[in-house]
Length: 414
Image (cartoon, rainbow, N blue to C red; front, side, top):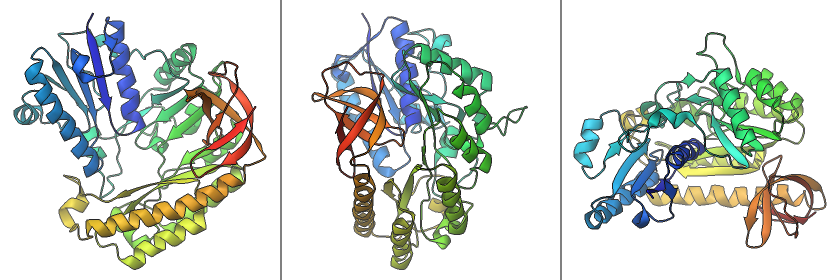
């Protein structure tokens, strides 16, 4: 029986695309294995948003090159944002790779399986990702995504709704609508659908408990979308809203298209319109020219905004991007690391304070699995919650009284 192994790094969109690849292969009789050494086909689903991610992809490819020397029958496929449009150059650089296909496109191993069925999703996880828009038109000065995933292309509402129903019938109880910029969804469709109207369609699906969506862009989030979050019962009170910096000059150099006044107004509208909403954000430290004072402005903004969680990364120049072409990467790596750690320390304290306020409260948890004898799942505000109970709670929504908190998770009992 043919076997496969998929190695995935990067965003939730990559993970959703890997699930599709798994479905394709399993529908053709392949069996997934945990180790590349045991597989006949290894797929590397790559990311290059940060230099650290790109380094991991290259290291993985080098290990597979050596593996192939002792397993000459091994087939290797490479996809994701590491793959450029110049496939001929990719083949020249990585001759041991058998198949290349760009992020989000159909696989090229047509000699192994019928790729016409690639659109079929796999049996769903409790929380399943569902891509609604590919690419990005924003061209933030640091971001490589538009150059690897292309310009924005929205899927038709009917196609998304059909796949959503398929996933729910397969066991999904939460759908996470995915896109590099979900707030732009529909602007390129003839009927000018938008994310708010799509949420209304998905909200009507029987058997579905929850809906989330990411990633959002502050300049594109509408009041209509906020109203939909407040009024639709299956849409969770949580979203990721990347601010990237707490300094207006840096935001301008990043070409983000908004300033902090706009972002503050958006936060105010979300928190007043969607009571109890949990907001997370992304921050880049060490952007070219970022002074210590400008970094301190970001720290101050964290204290002001009090996000539920922050994903922080040190700036790394990406090929083709405007920042790599016109700015000098002039912040020492050790200083970037110092700033990253300061953000993490400040946010850890803030998250601990926010989560401690949940102790004694009862939250609704959608159970996703079991780990080390404990059930785990997430609240509607995306808090990771653990509890112990002898029953089978997989895929069920249960009320859990919170008894212990930390910056990263909660513990409680039914």
